[in-house]
Image 1 (cartoon, rainbow, N blue to C red):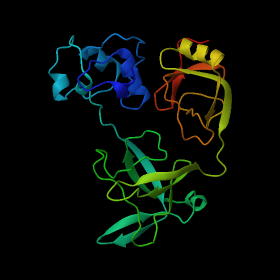
Image 2 (image 1 turned 30 degrees about the horizontal axis):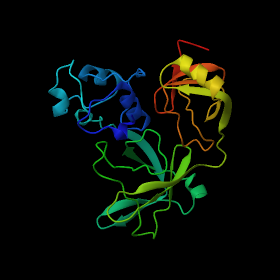
Image 3 (image 1 turned 180 degrees about the vertical axis):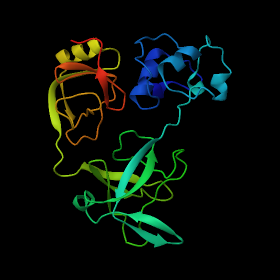
Image 4 (image 1 turned 135 degrees about the vertical axis):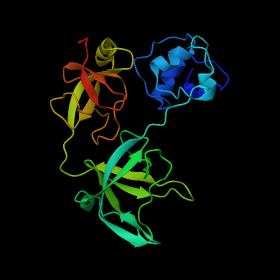
Length: 259
């Protein structure tokens, strides 16, 4: 059963927990067994990052079964250095404004540290001033007539308002020209084991992409050549080797098991 189909008062199986990880509800600490066995409080903390101080969860004994509503994700934020074109003084404070075009934004030099719940930014990501993710970042629309384009890493993006009082979101997230995406064919992925990635490479080979060639620890892997859709599985076979991943698309190192 998919995580979204589990009612708040229903117990949770290992397969339900894996579905939650696959859909970005939780991040995994280690590979989750493929099983319909219902998990205990101790199991939940073993396999995923959760808020262990959350009242309903904390009140359980370690061997008690948990229900869906007992599990709350840890609020994790990631710092991102964003490059902007200039600032605009409005209503007593400065607002960051972007370049007029995406290509011009690749040369932005002014920086601000912003935070997001997304380790890998992309379309739909929301940026915040604070690491607790309480104060959304709003770029300039009042002085320059438009927010413009910003840069983060090797990417540019437009920042826009979806309407009303909603926080702004990233739009048109794309690589700056001149950046290279290297492709690797006959790859496999798995959330269960390195050998599972080997099997996937044989039965359902994929082409993955990276900013690196050859691959090594610290490089990232993506499903698309624009390098915006990271591989979130924990094990990958690519570039003739097995790799342990961090669930955010970054290679941790060689797997202990190789194909």
